[in-house]
Image 1 (tube, rainbow, N blue to C red):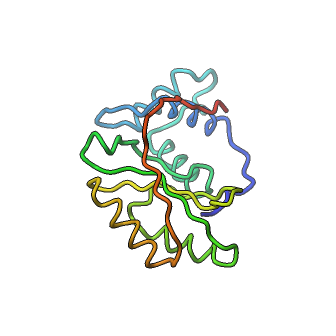
Image 2 (cartoon, one colour):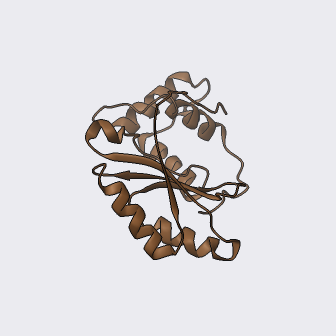
Image 3 (cartoon, rainbow, N blue to C red):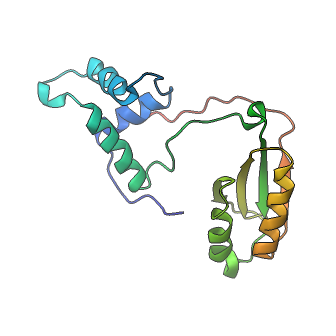
Amino acid sequence: MSAAKNTELSELDKKLINLLQDGFPLTPRPFLTVAEQLNSTQVGSEEDIVTEAEIIQHIQALLDEGILSRFGPMYQAERMGGGLTLAAMKVAEEDYERVTEQINTFSQVAHNYRREHELNMWFVLATESPEEIEDCIEEMETVTGYHVFNMPKEEEFYVGLKFAL
C-alpha cells in the first residue's frame, strides 16, 4: 500500500470526489454525465468547462497519486451468492511488509489495512461462494505462516459515510 503524496487537491478534484460519493451514473457514457453534472454547477468562463476525457484523466491521476485507493462499484457479495468476511492477523513487525505483499496477491482481498492493535493487519475477503472463505484463509495461513482470524458479519449497518471536501 502506498501512501498518498502531499498533493494539493484542485477545486475540480474536490468537486469530483464530492459528487462521486453520492453515486456513479448508470448511463451509456457515465463520465460524460459526470462532466455535464459538474459543468451545470460551474460559474465562470468557458475555460472552466470540463470534458469527459478530463474527468477520466482526473480520476486516474487521483488513483495514481494514492489520493483514491480504488474506484469501482461496491457489491453486496452475499446477495450475489458470494462470501464476505472481515479477517485479521497478528503479524510480527519484522514480517509485516512480507506478509502484506503475500496477502495482497490474493484476488479475494478487497482491501488490507494496518491497525495499532495486537491484531495489526486487517482485510476484507470477498469470494465467489461462502465455502471459499475457509479455503482462502487456509491458503493464506500456509503461505504466510500466520493464523488468520475469521470474523464474519453477524449484522449489517448502513452508515452512509461521506467525506465532504
